[in-house]
Amino acid sequence: MTASFSLRGVNKQYGKGATAVHALSDVSVDIQDGELLMLVGPSGSGKSTLLNILGGLDHATSGEVRFRDALLTAMSDRDLTAYRRRHVGFIFQFYNLIPSLTAHENVDLVREIADNPLSAADALALVGLTGRMDHFPAQLSGGEQQRVAVARAIAKRPAILLCDEPTGALDLQTGAQVLEALSEINRLYKSTTLIITHNADIARMGARVVRFADGRVREIETNATPAKPFELVW
Ligand SMILES: Nc1ncnc2c1ncn2[C@@H]1O[C@H](COP(=O)(O)OP(=O)(O)OP(=O)(O)O)[C@@H](O)[C@H]1O
Image (cartoon, rainbow, N blue to C red; front, top):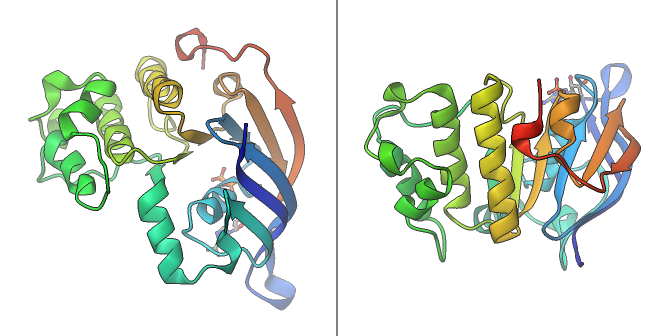
């Protein structure tokens, strides 16, 4: 497999002097193309900071971040925006859907900025929402809204899917449906998928689990047989 991301000595510091926060310290890791990787660790250990840097939302303070042949850490803001639009789908804990648009229209919006998108209907079918396309967010459950957010993220067929606590606001059953959708998309489209979770059970669905503490990678575990989302308990 080829490396999707290659990180070397990545540091991220917020602020200066005595009040500086070292959100990431000397992070070096390779992430393979098509991999499903879980990021775990205590609150404040740097997981979201790393995701934001990989997604081109934030800059590392020092070190190198490469995506395939491109050195993200040398890119201008404009190039990073182009990279993000072309290659990255984001899913956050809160779904951030536009309340006045239907599920179909919410997904359609993102397709306009993509080169070769899935149809909104196909993206919604992948997350099991064919019957809910014309519903507004307020007419959908939390799990369904999150699945619309997943459909929106995957409609542009991103090479990378970055998920920050995607089930943080959901119960077991609906959370498992969202994870099932992510795992299926990873299998079908081979999007490199990174999922942040606080939950040790959810982490078992990753082929690898990267454990953070104090802004550093403490451990990388390999799972020979990753768990299926519906086998997870939390
Ligand atoms: N914009 C910012 N300005 C200043 N400090 C920040 C900023 N963003 C994050 N931090 C700090 O950087 C550190 C890492 O934060 P980060 O959000 O990456 O942690 P996390 O592991 O994702 O935490 P959580 O699990 O609570 O989301 C924390 O100490 C946080 O307070």
